Amino acid sequence: MKKRTQTVVGLGLLTALVAVLQALAISIRFGVFNITLVLVPIIVGAALYGWMAGAWLGLIFGIIVLVTDAGVFLAVNVPGTIITCILKGVAAGAIAGLVYRAVSRKNKLFAVVLAGIAAPVTNTGIFLIGCRLFFYETIRSWAAAAGMENAGAYMIVGLVGINFVVELAINLVLSTAIVQIINIAIKNKE
Image (cartoon, rainbow, N blue to C red):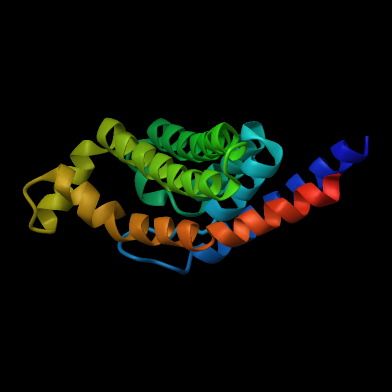
């Protein structure tokens, strides 16, 4: 019972942290979209409580993005926007948790580094797939307006380039801190 209570409290705190960080991120822009700061608590939750916790935290992230930062896409394709926002968040958290679980028995630091890479790669990858599937014509017109003939190159360079690099760097820089948080939490569980 004590372990379950700790899990509920821990997930509650991480859920609140995801909500607050994503709300704060609205004002931080590199390029067209806001930077994603919430991948760190999603990775922590996925590592501490498993891939389903990561998926939950990713779901919260996806919902907040949908409500706060997806207006330009909602105007083009509502179902496509909902699918893309929710799927990218849930998958980023779940995959981070699965990667962490697969590697953590051998090396926790390496597991967190890999999870820290997997989360933004998944998040950004699904965003790009969603852009291609649901918003390609709109993105082609944005690319043309920006003087780029290739819409795919515009998606990589114009939409996600700088954001992805910053998100990946944040996760990698904070990996050691994440491992320390996890180790302290595990010791407190015992």
